[in-house]
Structure formats: structure tokens, C-alpha cells
Length: 631
Image 1 (cartoon, one colour):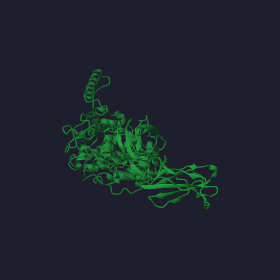
Image 2 (spheres, one colour):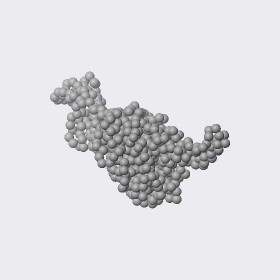
Image 3 (cartoon, one colour):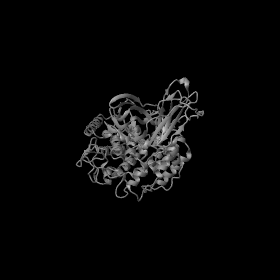
Image 4 (cartoon, helix red, strand yellow):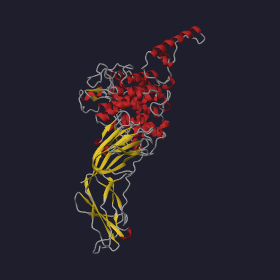
């Protein structure tokens, strides 16, 4: 979409627009020299401000996409959980449109209709969007800047997606664009969208900034976009870029004499790491203390910040990397330090964070939309939002009972050694069980063996028979529920139908421990939330030499985690000795894999996993551990 032409007054006040002032003839050498001198002075002045965020060329800022192009959206799928989630919202009635109601969801329903129109071209969705845009004008009256900041950005993005400028050019140029321009400076409850963005380093300012950036993108106003970026850079921590915020209580600030919107890298207070804290939102839960008082304001603030960052990125600003990746550090603090994962209407942020940082925060599709944006699983997911389908657990072969002749008197001339269970690797495991293989062996000549019989006792109960896959199989794979004590016994029958005494193994307790049972060292460890993980979270790092050590008492241990296209190699150590290098790379994502198992003499041991930092796909994650312990 192209922006409005820049008029003479705009050119006079905006050097970036290319205006040189009236009366300067192209053939006037003196005028040209004066003009060149003016440009030189301007260049010198710009050189004095090295920390101002670099912006795109005015021609770039003056047109094009607000957030995401229709061509990109047309590559997104029209199937899967993410699409169905988006479509279900798009098919809802818009409802009452009130930009003065900060809790209204009409804006995201309008956005959903715009996204579905962009993908399908179905005219009814565009018609609904345009009708909603017309109804929205003036409904900001009586509201606050927070309400306007929350509700406006989605409408602007939707207007772009339905090509309002060509679908209804009279409305677009005659009403919609002038209205958007007026909203930048319209006084609502004593302040404006612009002044709130430049004064409030918290959720108010960030929602206002997202809508301010959307307006600038739609209008093609490079000057407003550059100022928005400058203020946002200041929020992320660059006081050299902008330091005009009015901060509240300062106890969460790393340096109260130089307050910032996001605390700098490496910041500590009273021995507590508060790197990535959003101080003006953390204070909503109270003054600094550890552990912190629960408050959702930081995630609320990030809703506006992430959308603002993405609009600015589309228009040429390196927002996601500013101030040592301040937005990533903010998410890490909430996950790793505060222990507050994104939930509810903050879920959409996980997909955008993953898209920009290669993290593993995303939750399962469809995600909840937020205050002003959503549907990120469909927009930014590798295949339109949905992760690779989670494979169903590999079913345990269903053994066919082997007919057992009635035993005859006497002792068999063959027998079996006591069965021993062991943990085994698996393609995928169920949420309520762990794969185990029980093995035994023959004593005597195989030619004299007719069959084996296997039985199991659970928690000291009676032994019950287990069907085998064949009469003479010497092992059986099965899924066992953790938290129980198991004992197995086996006997052999010879060809004269005589049976041997039962050979009984030791009691074995099966436990499964969450990733929190490990001791993590090195850098980069963070919590990844997903319903595909056991317990809902895993812990992951991509930093070479990051290590997790799990101490256990037992004879068998297993590491459970995901594989996928972003996963790399890890070295595994048992009691400090390198025992394996595991490659977690797969072309599709697969959670809950038993990645490695190790056996040891009964007793106390340690299993350590060291991240290799594989180039291009470095991530290594720990979901859980499983242990078999003799009793």
C-alpha cells in the first residue's frame, strides 16, 4: 500500500521528505552550493547522534506492508490447528466496536477477518472489515490512551490486509487516513497517544507505541516512524537514544539514577539477577523483593513491545537485537528467574519470540490472541503456525497368547535366568508411561526348549501372566507407569512339558523426574513451555558447553527430551565419563523422546548432558529423566 503524497508543508518541516525550500532554481550554482552546505551541516548534526536508530530510506517507509504482506500470508496453510483457530475467530461477529473500551476484543476479530481475507480472497471478510473500520471512527471518544493503544493497531493492520486504499479509496483518503493522523495528537484523558508513548515506560507506553508505529506505517510517515523507533530504543535501555520517560517507584531499577525501560545485561541487585526486568511494570507487584510478588504487568507490557518491535523491524529497524536483545532478556527473566511463563492472552507472544530468536517458548496451537494482536502460530509458524504433528506413541506390539500345555510331573531339563527390566529409547512416549524392555535368557539347550512363561507383580501384589510375542522370545517391550514397584519372574518348559522353577528378579521401582531435578550450569538455559512436554515445560539451551547434571540412585537412567530441525548434538557423561554423543536433529519436531539410556551398578550416580552448540541447529532440551532403582 502506498502512503499519502507529502505536501509542501510536510517537506518544509521534514528534511527526510526531500524538500529544499521554495525559489531554488536547479540552474542556480550559488543556490546549489548553499544547499550542499546545508546538507553537510545536517550530516554533521546527525553524526553527533550516533545512537539514534537507523531508519529505512523514506521511499521504503512511505509505502508497503504495515506488518506482513499478503503474498507471505498466501503461503500459509488452510488446515491444521492454527488455521482453524484463526478461522473460528474470523467467523465470529465483530460485535460492538468501542475503541474506548480497553477490554474489547472487537479489534482482534477484525484483524482475524483481515488475515483470512488475505489468505482466501473471500470478499465477505473484506466487506466486514471495511464496515467495521467505518463504524470505529469516533468510538475512541471518552476513553483512555491505553484503550486506544490496545484497540487501534489491529484495525490498522486489517485495513492494510484488505487493501482499503483500492477497495474503498474515497473512505480511505477522505476519512480513514485523516482520522488516523488525528489520533496521534488527539487528547483523550489529558494526554495523547504520542505523549503516552514518550512518557510511560510500561504497558501503557508500549501499547501506544505499537499503534503509533502502525499509523506511521499505514500513512507512510517516515518521520513518525523514526521518532517511534527512537523512543522505543530508549525504552529498551538506550538512554542516549531517548531518556524522556517519567518513571514510577525505582526499586526494581538497576541504576535508579539512570532508569531504563528494561534493565541492562548482567544487572544484579542484592545478589539477585534482575537482567531483563521491566522495572516500571514489576513495581506494580510491589517494591523490589525476592522472590518477587506475582504480577502479570510485564507480560502485558511485552504485548505492546513485541508488536511495536515487529512493525519497526518490517520498516528497517533492528529492534530485536537492540540493547543486547533486550526483548529476549525480558522473556528470559520471566521464564527462568521469576518462573512466570506466558499463559492466557499472552500465549501469542511465544510464537513471535521463537520466530525472531530461535527459542522454544511456543505453546501448542491454537494460541490465545491478546489485547491487540494474535494468531502468531499461523503467521510465523514454520508451516503456517502448526509445529510438526506430534507422532502418536509407538504402540507396544500386542502379543498373541501362546497355548501352554498342561505341565507334567518332573523338572525341566532347561531353565531361565531371572528377568531384568531396563529402560529403552523410544520414538515417542505417552504422558503416563515409560518404555521398558524385560530380558531373560536360557539355561540349557535351545533344542530342548518348548516355551517360556513370564509373570509380573506390581507393588507387591500377586503375580499375573504376560503374553509373549512368541513362545521362545527372550525379551518383551512394554510401557510401565512410573511411581510403582515391579517384579518379574520367568520359567521354561521343555519339550516333555516339564517346567523349571520360577526365576525371580529383584523389585525395581520406576520413577520419572521433571527437568527441574537437574542442576544446570553454563549460559542460555531457559524454560520452554508446551503442552507437548511432560508437565508442560522443558529446559533448553543452545550455548556450547552449557551442561545439566542429574544425580540419581539406581541401576538405569534415561534422558527424555525433544528432537527437531533446530536441535543439535549433545555429549552424555555417566559419572564423569563420556559415554555417548547424541544427535537430536530431525526434519520434524518430535517431543517426549527417550533420547538416551544408560545402565550402571546399583547405587548413586550422575548423568550429565553437555550442549555441543551445533552450527545452524544448536538447541538441546531436557524434558524429564526416568530411573529404575532396585529394592
